[in-house]
Structure formats: structure tokens, C-alpha cells
Amino acid sequence: MAKLKKTKNELKAQREALRRYERFLPTLELKKQQLQREVRRVETALRESAAAGEAVLARLRPWVKLLSAAPELRLGDYVRVAAVDLETANIAGVNVPTLTEVRFESVPVDYFETPPWLEEAVAALSELTERRVQQLTLERQRDLLGEELRITAQRVNLFEKVMIPRAEDGIRAIRIALGDAQTAAVARAKIAKGKGAELLSGSGT
Image 1: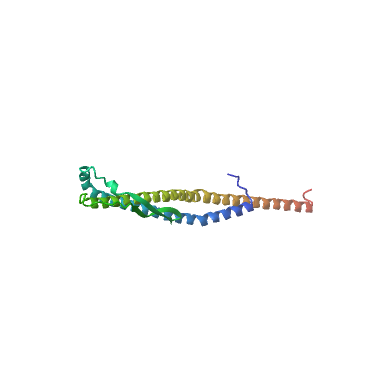
Image 2: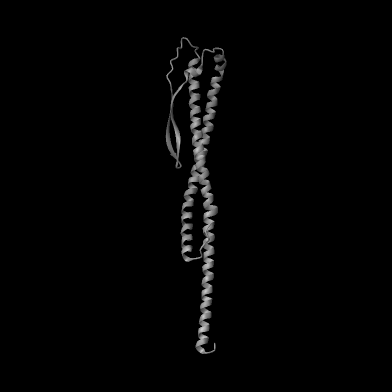
């Protein structure tokens, strides 16, 4: 850190810097609060999605034994992801992916040759797959928002605990130094004036 100059120009510069910091800090604090809200929202959505996924998984469990008894039936053969459609949304200044749709391949099912429960099992697995993609998307949102929150919180701390106190201390130190210099100048002027009066009156000779 450069040595602080005890000048009027430096005092002006420090005051301007302090004003900038104090203007910018509320914006940073607002962004931090927005990010905190969004991270909480995403975490809530993640918990809800996970709970919904568990409910779907519970629906699938009764068919696990039936599937193991029919090895020729592979449920995954009937549930194939063709595409995952994502969009980008700006949340609190952060670009994050949002899930639009999970598209599945159209796999023909011969319901005369397969067990009657297969259709419901396929629907449940499709929903479970979609839930998992949704969770992965939400996890990515949480990670991106969390990283931006971490950076923003660091900046808030920097302004609150370093930049603003440093500028305030600098202003205080310069004002004291300028005050001392002014006092010394006045004292010197008085001494010089006294000596000049002595010389004029002849008492100083």
C-alpha cells in the first residue's frame, strides 16, 4: 500500500473514494440479499424435487421383483432420452440453465406381448428420469448462484471492513496532519510577526 500523502488534494481524493464506496455498498448488499433468497429458493425446489422423485421410486419398487422374474424385459429399453431442452435465465444477475422439457424417444410397446403393468412402469420411470434431470439442473443453478453469492459476500466484506474504514482513517489522518500544519504555520507567523515588531522598535538589537 502506497504511503498516504498528507495534502489537500489527497484529502479530496479520499473523500471522493469514500463517497463511491458508500454509494456502491448498498447495491452490493442488495445483490447479496437477492442471491441469498434465490439460493434458498433453489434449495427448497431441490428438496421438493427429491421428495417427488422418492415418491415415484416408491411406485417403481413393486415392479422390481416382477422385472427380475422377466429378464427379457428391460425397462430402460422403453425409456430413452432423446433430448433435454434447456434455456438460460438471468437470476440476480447470474445466467443459469432452466429446464424446459425432457423429450423421450418414441419406443413402440406391444401391449399384447408384454405384462399389463409395463405401461405404468414405463410412465413411472419416465417421470423419475425427468425428475433426475430437473434435479441436476437445479443443482447447477445452486452452484452458480452460490459461487456468485460467495464472491459478492467477499466484496461486501471488503468494502465494509477494509475500503471504507481505510478511507475514513485516511481522511482523519490527513485532517489531523493538515490541522497540525496550519497550527504550526500560525505559530510561525506569530513568532515572525513578533520578531519583526522587535526589530522595528529596536528592542531586538
